Picture 1 (tube, rainbow, N blue to C red):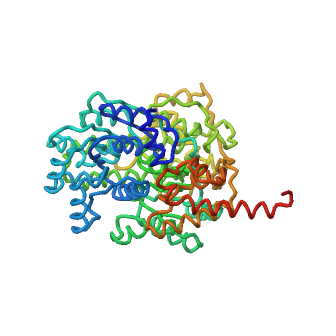
Picture 2 (tube, rainbow, N blue to C red):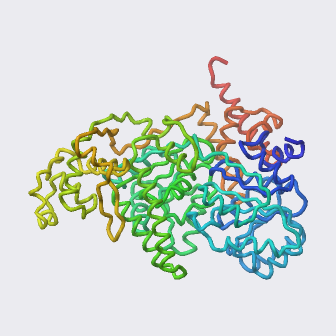
Picture 3 (cartoon, rainbow, N blue to C red):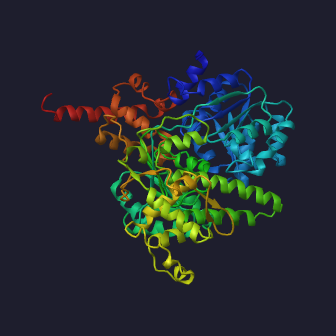
Length: 614
């Protein structure tokens, strides 16, 4: 690392070294090369373009679709001593004019802009007159129709670049990208000899778990009650679920707010800011919330409903543990989630007025395939982390020791006879029904539909009545995952036997499945020993809140929890020692150093007086 870059990293960010992959991207950009960085949430993508932006002459433009991220990043940069601004729809016309005037005067080093703003006359005129050294494209997967957050405005980015008097270095950043999406980014942004870095998708501090509670709402209420000092997000697929769960949490004394597209702009903004400023503990939301939320102290993300694809799930789950601390990512699964996802996929395509029927069918097939992979994740009995990493093209060990399937004491159980009964039911009923009917017949349910077809006369009717319906459904899911059954798509999903099932049906093989003792408990969070004095930590948080309230910024913009924990561990006694705390740069040291040192010194002195061994 050269001296200039080391100085910038220490002065503005308070770090003595880069994380994995960051330096390679920074040096590549500074050498004039384009860049593509695929780095998981929380790995420090923003530093990869902010550091070279500070070092280079001219202005850096950062294209982002996320108003909340722009605000967070600009607040953090200004707090660190870097002049930055943003241009998006949240600004009034007067604020926009003032920001543009300042930009033309060369006041800003980094400017964040929404892609839709690029082609306004005022901004385009400014960009053509300014010296733009770097164009950073954040959330670059939005440029691909194969991505899970496709934004048509992203496809015009290079059209904007072509209208500039000089092509700047172009750098693209994303947290999740399959090979197809990666290729789309390279092609559509026309990156020149890019330095390409993929640091890996593994977030070792995240604990992954899939639970099948009888009552999802009660599971979440119990989890929140057992983690009273933790902040988190609960994702639901429907507005109704959001509203009802938020009401239940507040009724139990868990400070919660809601976020979905059915709320007014003002309520959404107020709720989002309350969550960012730690004025509520739990945000209950649809997937309209969270993309670009740079809140570092989210300790859990719970999915009330299964998302439609792995990309969406991993991005949303990845909003937990951005500070590197242990965090829980829990998916609450039920078979009805699959039907809901299919409904949402179909409705989304039907509502599209720009797609031809042939395109809709292509996209429907693609989304169904992605849903199938998501369902496999929810129903496998092997390592969850391994499944996620392999989905994104990475090799992974068979066990991670930090997911529900690896930590649960699951017992390998022979399910051959149960599987044969289920397959026989499927064959005898003409392979015309979905999993629900098959499970009902096997468990001896007394329904009008079963009676109308006369299925109670089947020899297999009630053969698995000694098992819970969820256990039988788990066996059906296992048969699908292992390829013994297939799901035929249509108006309603229908189960079909496959060629692979013949050996099982004919008694030529046995089938085992790991059975877990699921009790709807909270995930067992893996705890690290930080040797943190919680009393001192509380005092530092209180002081941080005073500064944050005075400045009107979220607390983590002043110092992250990770920085406060490092202060607790190191307990610096001077400004020179405070400089060694992670995340304490020169500007923050000057602004806050004395105040935090005073609290630490007073606490250390009082502790020594109270210690009888002193």
